[in-house]
Image (tube, rainbow, N blue to C red):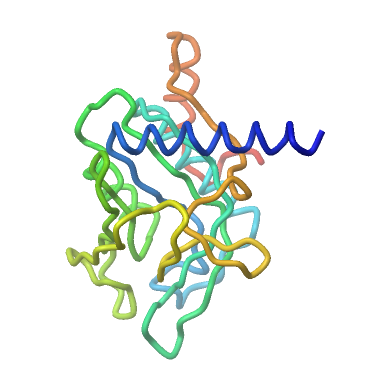
Length: 203
């Protein structure tokens, strides 16, 4: 049973790896400690889940393949206020090769008050792009930071962690995959959800 589970895990990771070699990809989350550059009233767990639900709908409404992963991120990186924040993130693949994934992620990064998003062209190394103007946001609005030669099996500053072990992507943090909506009725529901205010979404 354990070997069969490992086989399924390896198959999932291999599929995602192949997709990122053939198509543009990126990562983003809507989780945030607090609004107003972290100085406002902290978001509750429910609010962050609502925000992520809204983000997922917006990504799917744009026709991307999305995989939900467990992750962590260094908020306010490089400052005395830096801290590792556990969160649910999304790995997005431009499976239809629309060519607009970077712009979409940059826009959504700003909408959901993220310090940055990660984007990589097909088969290439990922790059961190700053998406807010907060004084402690890294790498800074409009700035970028290359993230090394590969996103699989190597550690980095912006990474996911499971039980304290750093990695970029591994099977252990893959939670769920959402394919591209194939039917008009499915897409309609996703679009309607994406247009709702995240505060109104049920969790």
